[in-house]
Amino acid sequence: MSGMVWTYVPPCPSARSTKKRLKLEPNVKFLELFLLLFRLAGRPRGCNQHLAIMKERDIPITETTFSSLIVAHGVNKDPQGIQSVLDTMRSVQMSPTRITYEALMTAFAVSGLIPEVKRVARQIKQEKISLSQSQLSSVLLSLIKSGQAGTDFENVDYIVGMMEEAAGKMDLSRLMLQCIHSGYVREAVHLLPKQPLIRQNNHLYTNAMVYLREMVHAKVEVTEVMNQTYWWKMCNDVRQQEINQYSLEVALECALAEHREELAWALIRALKAAGNPVRQHYFWPLLHYSALTNNSSKLLGCVKEMVKLDITPDLETLRDHVIPGLIINHPLLTLEMLQGAGLTISQAATPILVVLIQNKMLDQCFEFVREMKPLSLREIISPLASVWAASPQRVISLLGILMEMNRSTLNEGELEPDWGGQFVLDLLNSRAGLSVHQIRPLFEELHKRNVRVSESAVDILMTRASKVIQQAIRDNLRLVFDPSVGQPLKEEEYNLLPHPNKMNVEELECHLVELRAKGLNTRGTLRRLLIMHASSNNTQRVLALIKEAEVGEVSLSGGMMSRIMTTLTESSSADRLWLCIMNCKRSTPHLMWTLIRCRNILKRYLEEYSKPHA
Image (cartoon, rainbow, N blue to C red; front, side, top):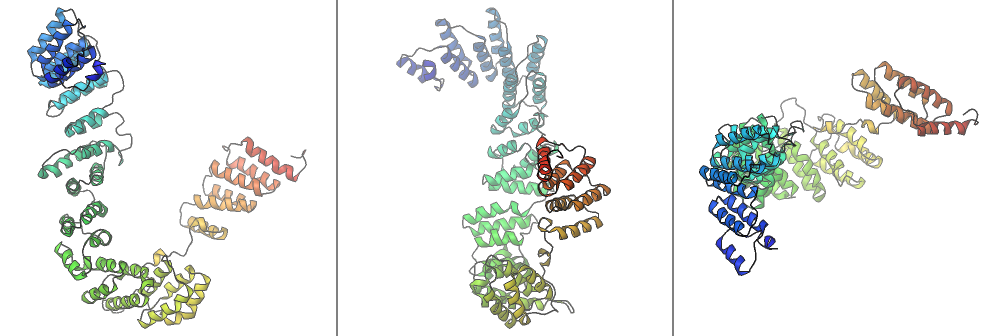
């Protein structure tokens, strides 16, 4: 019980006096614990006092007791004290064991006597005594913490070499994490390539991620000036050793997750200095943290830093992460603030207008547009369509003004893009969509504002809309139709061809011919076409496609043939099924004929013929 009571008592006089006052008798575990604490504190005198107590009470003195004394003298940098303990051991006829040698190597390591560490290591080898992996790991940690790793980590490599030769599986993971959290990050990075299977993930993003995350989490104290250089060296070492090619990105992700903004900026600068691409979304959390504080100057400071790094915030960054954190009631003032942060009018004006439209601040929109030069309608059309239902006339009026401004920038003979058609297409594809009764008022308002729709836009509308909407469009098309207008700029997004998974048999047959003509991979289309023909009991076409595949050197896998046979068994006649079986055995000899498949085939025969025939 006394051992349990005193487990957390520090080695001080008050602890001993309290023990006496409570009349608790120390046992072996209690005294060994105090010896361990005195050993770590480097207090040989305390060890000797408890050694005397052990003698008084006839408690056996073991090699663990002597090892504590050895390490205590080592921490105190007293090689003579170490030698005196060894002499005492010899006098009582106690031979050094693995525990003693571990204590000696640790004591000499913390004393800075590296030649003595190597001498003990040679002695261990001569006497054919092997230290365990945990003992060598403890020695290595003591060596690192005492600052004796070596200029080029040669002392660390010496102990690691011993660990590689020792019995058992070498695992440095715990040691590396202890080094990181003790502030010895360079040493931990040096040990990374020594860790078995560290490159097991083929140098991808997650390789050694736990150690990079802990490097960030440990909050290693370095000066602000050295921050960028320090982290660049750490992560560059990991990258050069081919452990993780994205070490800086991993560290940046961890820094952002822990809201360490200064470190995140240092890592972004290090990424830029290393020539790695710095993407826009790296800055979004930093902008978000600044916006949460309602501190517009801090938010603009982030934009300034981006501009200094020669990274111009794109429309998405400004629209979603910068402008919502500023005062947008006065858009011209917002524009001035962004100009002060290093952006041009053309870079800042369009996202400001988009944010105003999204917030349905149409009065400010008209005020802002009157003061601006032509803006990019490509990014504005979709937001306008999303708020059209709230104020149809004003939204189309704003669209007409913007289109009129853009007409002035067209060169002679240049077709005007179909902004009107794009607007109607975006309305049709919006969440609310378009109803029949909205078509005529919409087209009348577009006609009034001189907004026209091209033939391409009409074709896409007629393809995408329901039959009722199609008829309403035909009835009112004369109000807005203008064949001289160009095409919608987003026409490529409205591909009229369905996906192969949604094609019928005829469309897939045409698609297969097209793929073959272009020399593209036909495997997926062929597989789907075979299954569709098999399910419709078109055995002849199935056999023809299999032959075509053989001619085109397209190998049909066992799984594909198995699926075809299963489909035919369910839908085809027995004779046609038998014909396919023979063809399958010839073209796919590796296909396994399971009992279940044979049973299903026999069942089909029994349904059509007599039992003897089956």
